Image (tube, rainbow, N blue to C red; front, side, top):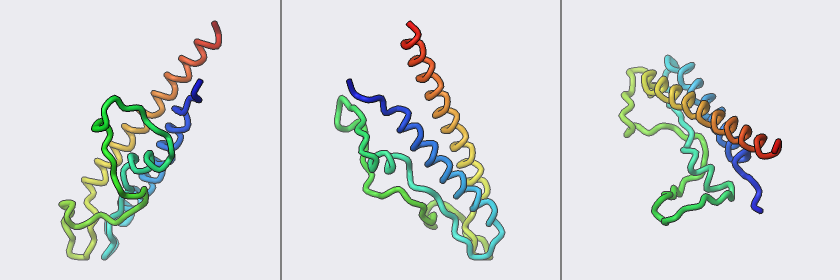
Length: 126
């Protein structure tokens, strides 16, 4: 029987969400800092590829691969970020949208873990 890796995967995503929230909070905190370059964390899919956890797929096109490693990077100017006169590239609207995405992903993550935990407890009790 294969070990259940859902909890490990959920833990890694929670760690990634924590890092992303810290980066977004730093962007918001530096919104008025001259020449500050906004940062973001690379997608969780890149972290998932580096973990060694293999996801099952019925077709090889179901999961796309990204060659980038998971790390914090500066947001490029091509991302529709208007450079302010001070040289700052933080767009508060985008940062608030990222905060909403992080909140939604965390709630989904914790909800799945709770449901899976309840299902496991139900099998043990019988």
